[in-house]
Image (tube, rainbow over all chains, first blue to last red):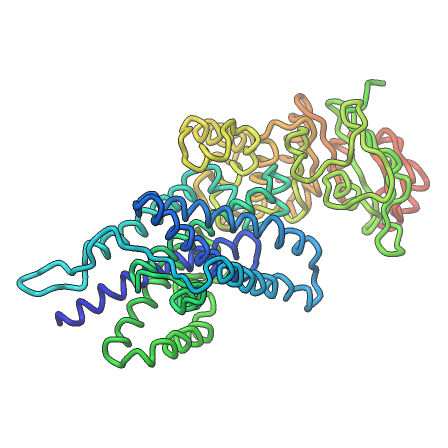
Length: 302
Length: 253
C-alpha cells in the first residue's frame, strides 16, 4: 500500500511535467494546425539557457523565468520566419500538407546541431533549489520531497494562469476564436497572424518550463543529445493525443494519466517496458477513443 | 447625389480561365440599403469576398469615404467600419452567445496585448460585455446570452451573427443572404431590423429572396455571368427586360 502510494506520487509528478509538454503541443496545434516536433528542441534550448543563467546568477528563480522568455522568443521566431511563410504557400496537395511537419522535424535537428556546436561535450547543470529528500511520514520516507512539491506547485500555478487567460480575458477569447475559424475571426477584426505567433510563444514558454522541470526532476544535467528530452517530447505527444489534441484540460488529464500508468509499470514490471507501454496506450487511445479521453466529437474546448 | 461611402470601381476577377466578375462598379451611399442580386453563380458572393479581402481582384479600385486606398485586408475591415455576416452564419459553436458577440467587439478593447493577457484592465472586459449585451438586446436575443451557440435554433443563430456584426458599431453592414433559410415571420422581423438600422449605417445585401430585396432595398445591382446587367431604383430594375430574362422562370415578375 505504502509502495503503491509512493508510485502514485512519482507518477503524478512526472505526469504533471508531461502535461506541460502536452500543453505546448496542443497550443501550437490549435493555433496553426501544425504537429510541432520542434517543441522538443525549443524545450532543450531554453533549458540550456536556464543552466547558463543559473551558472551566472546562482538563482533558480531568475533562471526559470528567463528560460521561459527564451522559449517563448525562440518559438515565436520559428513560427514567424519558418512556419508562417511555409503555411501561406502550402495548399491541399498531399506533399504540401506534409511540408510543415517535415519542417518542424528539420528545425528540431537544427536546434540540436547548434547546441552541439555551442556546448560540445559540455553539459548544462541544473542544481535544484530545494532538497529532493522525501518527507518523513510515520518514520518512513515518502516519494514527495520539497523539490517535487515545488514542481507540482509550478505546474499548478501555470495551469491556473493559463486557464484564467483563456477563460477570462479578451486575449483568451481571441486565441479560442482564432483556433476555431481564422476566417471568421479575421472578419471580426482579430489579428489572426499576431494571435498565432502569440500561441506559439505561450507554447514555447510552457515547453521551456517542462524542460527545466524534467531536468531538475531527473538527472539534474542536460546535454544536447539528452535522452530525457526525447522521452519528454514523445510522452508529451502521447499525453496530448490521450487528451484529444484539441484541449488544454485534456492535455493535463492525458499527462497525469500517462505519468501514473508509466510509474506503475516502472515499479512493478521494470523499466524496459515503459517505452513499449507508452506506445500501447497511444495505439489503444487512437483505436478506442480517437477524440481523447475527455474529448467529445469535434470538441475544441479550452 | 451625395458622395459615396464606398465605391468599388471596375472590379474584374477570374479564377483560372473563368471570368467571375468583369468590370463591375458598385457604389454605396450613407444610410442607403443596396442589394446585389442575380442568379446562382452570377458572382454576387465573389464581389462581397473581394471587398472583404477574401479574394484578390485582378483589377479595379477601392474607394472608401471618398479616398482611394488599397483593397482592405480581412482583419482591417472592422477598423474601417465595415462588418460582414456570412452565408453559413459562422458562429463559434462551443463559445457562448455572449462570447461570440464579444469576439466582434475586439476593436473596442483599449488595452494592449500584455495587459489583456494579464487581465489587468478589468473595466475593459466589462465594457465589452456591456456592449455585447446591448447588441444582443438590439436583435432581441438578450435572453440567449449564456447559451452555447451550438444549442441555438437556426433563426436565433442569424440574430446572434447580426449582433456580432453590430457590436463594433459599423458604418457599413454587409449581409450575405440574411433571409436564407428563414420562415415568413422571421423574414418580416429581418426586414424591420434592416429598415431600423439604416438610421445609423449603410447596408449592402446579397440576397436570393426577392421579397426581402424589394421591400428593403433603395437601389439594386443585378449581376449575371459576372457583369452588371442592370442597376438603379428597386422598382425600375424589377421591370427591366434584361433582368426578367436573366431571372426567367424564377418568379421575379
